[in-house]
Image 1 (cartoon, helix red, strand yellow):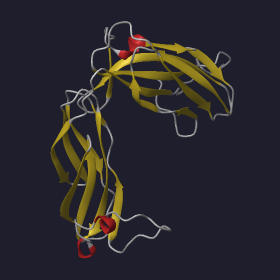
Image 2: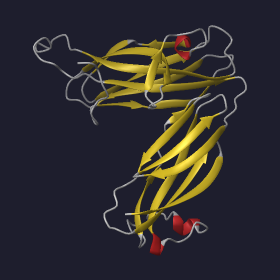
Image 3: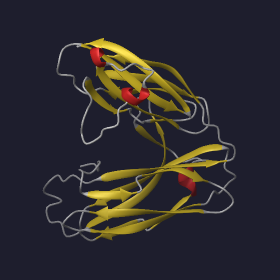
Length: 260
């Protein structure tokens, strides 16, 4: 069976992403720690790829090109075995082969489980192996983080943000939302009560739900709609959703009213 994301608790990677690497005149050296939580050893194959996001915000692998970050990354080792309940470091370096163009360069490092050589069942049964990736974002030259929020709307049980990236590095919509019963809504101009801090697990009266906005990246030169699912509201009534977000350094607050 094709490798896929591992169930929680089987393996771990730290860090899980690199977002602020800067390419200069010197090599960039970083380390990923692979953690094996299993009761048996795992053997892993490492590969690095160029990538983008498709219209559904899914990773799409691309062929390498002279400016793609995967061409500049060397990894050691490419195959390794980690004993049960232990970890090991995996080192990689970034050494551009040509002058990097200004802006962002991306790669993804995949860690794929290999079948054990002593597994006598591998030809008789279908076994699920893991594949987990680490996104690498590196920048060179002049960097412009800039984006336009064309719209933010509520439709059904989801919030939709229409975002266009007009800069040359990726952006993310950072933020949170709260759902209030209209009768207890504290007002949009009262941020301390509108977005209460959870103290001793005590929620204020009228607060029906809360959460974080989806943080999918919007790559340079793309326009995407990012959806965030809302928590289920049990009781009927009129509610107000307040959203506090930051996009490329610009904070905003949006409110929506709906009936359940």
